[in-house]
Each structure stands twice: as C-alpha cells, then as structure tokens.
Image (tube, rainbow, N blue to C red; front, top):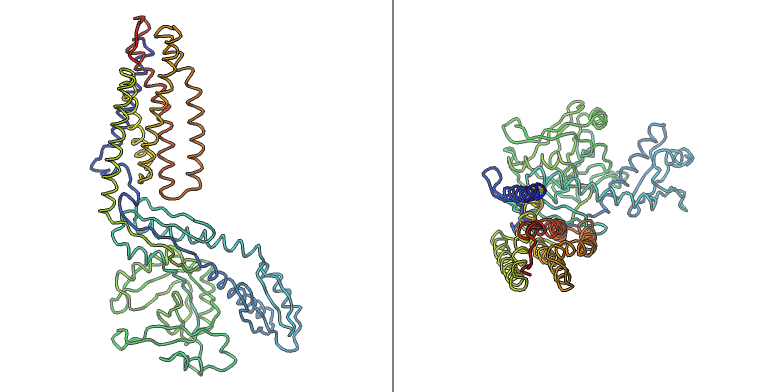
Length: 528
C-alpha cells in the first residue's frame, strides 16, 4: 500500500477510535448521549400567554404617567378609568383646558392615540403597531423568564420554544419533582408595591369582608382602588383567615424595579425574602415611602397581599418581604423574583407527564426495532452483493458510530423520532453503496477491467448521491429551523447521518476496495 493509502486507513481508524470513545459512558459523563422527554421521562407543557394581562398593566402605567406628569406641571389630576383592553378615558377637572393634558400625552404617551369623547373627556387608545409590538415583547419576555427559572432549577436539556402567536411549549426531561417545577414556571410573580388607602387619619381600609371594606371608602375614592385579599395572622404569626385591603390602583414600584432577591432570617428566625432595587427603582421607592410615612405599604404578589407593613421611615434601595413562608416556599419565591416576573399570566392548554418506565420501554422497543432492521438490512446486502456487501456493512457500522459520536460531541438530545432518523439515514447510507455497486456492475458488463470499473463506479455515482442527499439536507434544515421538540431531534440525526453516509460511502468503502483490489495486483475478478 502506498503512502496515500496508509494515511487514509489511519484517518478511518482515528475516526473510529474518537467517536467510539465519545459514546462510552464514564464516571464523569455517565450519559454521553442526552435523552429527550420521550426516552427519559419528564413533563410536557403547552401554555398560553394571556397577553391581555400585559395590556392591562401597560394601560395602568399609562394612566399613572398621565396623572404624575400632570402633577409635575401643577395641573389638577384627572380622573382616569380603563374603558376597554388597551384604552382608558381621562375626565378633566371642570374649567381646565385640555391643551396641557394633550401636550403631556404627546410627550409621554406616544403609544396611544388621543381623541375626545362627547362629554369632553379624553380617550386614549393604544395604537395597533404598539399592540403588535407589546404582544411580541410579552411572548419574548415570557420565554426568557421561563428559561431563566428552568436553568436555575438545574433541569438538563430543557426545550422551551414558542408555538403559534401566543403559546409556549415546554419539555423538561428527567425532572425529580414535576409538580414543584410546574408551579415555579407558571407563577406569574407580578410583584407590586401599593399604598393601602385610608378611611380616616391613621385608619387603613382593611377588614374581613371585601364589600364592607369597599363601602367604608369615600365615594370619590372607590374607582381608584382595588380590593385584594391577604392572610390574616394571629399573635403567633399563624394564618387564621382572610382579610381584605383597599389598595390604590396605581403601581409606582413593581417587580421590574427589582435587582435581586434572597432568602434571609427574620426577627424571629423565620424565613423572609430580602430584596434590592435597581438604580431606576430606588428613587421611586424612596419617593413612595417618604410621602407615606405611618401608612401601610401593601406588598402584592399576583394580586394577593403577602404583607402590609407600616412605613416608619424613608427606604431607598433595600427591603424585606415578610409572610408565612416555609424555607422551600421562600427559596422558590426568591428564585422566581430573581428570574423576573412573567409579563402576563399563563393558561395550561396541555399537560403530559412521561414516566421513566415508559421512557425505558420506548428505548427498549426502539433499540429492538433498530437492531432487527439493521440486521435484516445487512443480511440482504451481503446476500445480494456478496463480498462487496461486507464492504457496505463495515461502512454502515462506521456510519452508526460516527452518528452517535456526533450526537455526544454536540450534546444533542436523542428522542424517539431521532431513533427513526437514525434508521432512515442508515437506509440512505446503504442506498449510496447500492448506487455505487450497481454502477460498478454496469462498468463490468461493458467489458472494463476491475480497477477501471471501481474507479468509474465511484466517480459517476458521486453526482447522483450528492443530489439526493442535498435535497434531503435542505428538508432537514427546514425541519430543524421551524420544528419543535421531537421534530428537531429527527432533523438533527438526519443531518448528521447524511453527512456521515457520504463520508463512509465514498471514502471508507473506496479505501476498502483499494486495500482488497490493489491496482498493482491487476485483479481479474470482484465479488459483487
């Protein structure tokens, strides 16, 4: 064998050793090929993002912006109310020109279209382009937040992807506590700091009956508050019932202003959540606490008051959330707050749990089907092509090793459709050999020598094989780009397998022919 042949054989051996080593489990890497949800077990969720919640928050902030900027210009605060999704009305004080308010809207509310109602009030409607952008931003923020939460939990190889206009697909392979993970993912964690309204000097609007609390408020304040529930605690800090708080609708400080959150010990050793605010949030928190000393500040999480401490002094950038938390609940809540609040609530459309035993059954049946298919394929090739068939079998085995090794190197996730993709690529690899072998047979029938037939067979079949593989590769790329979950797994194995089949069919098989039928020996016959 010449020097060129030696280095080619050495390359094949090196490839075989490298990719075989990649798929052998070790102490540091007991699972070299990551298994997907259908093989490992886990949780599959399809959630719908309720974009209307984000529009409601956006509208509330726009109303607060109109009022606060009017106050900065020494204008009377208008009475604002939501009229529909993404719109609100502002009733101006009697005898006040609307010109200054319209200027505020133009400067600070560019996302809204302004018109006048018949009663003289101003009508604000969110622009269609702004609605589209808000919808897109809400989905993207939800994806990022869920991804942060899942990664913080240490779930390996999760799949989190958008589906349609307002849906998110989540697959969590091998989770130890699926119920806890689902709760953490779906918790909106919309943190808000809101002032508790008063019905008299030093008397907060709080009580055990929601309607009674609402009725205790002056009539002119009733449209500007929300009645929210919270836990009532006894002297020992135990939950003894529910009480209701009349809190202002305006949200001057929210979870968006949070920089970090952590679990720490309270005054009695109980778990509480300490938080720090961003540079933008700290001045706002300072303003609200400085202006409302001796009043209650409701800490609202997902429209429930978790605590309502009295503001004793101005607070700038640090605070504590107290409540009846267990250590696990406090840890989970701190994790959720650190990862950011979801921009809107989630509705579960589909929930499916795959048990580990079902995953093992899928692996066993998939491997059994694969082994039976490969054995029958090898037997058919050897019976039909004899010695050349053994050549194809060796190339086929190397193809399989390369495919599995590449999955391990790239840390790709193997799914049940991925196993189907492996079988398909093995079939296409044999098909490449079949095209070459049939071309060699044609050359032999035309009276050419063995070496000339081998050379011409590989050269003339190459273009055909590349064409067929190229069209399949393009299809697989589209599946990978636009597919989710198992579809991507199928596409990955198909792409790797197609590349490996070209290498084995035109490099490995050719080297085997060259080793057996050396040009210097002038072979007179070939087993094909």
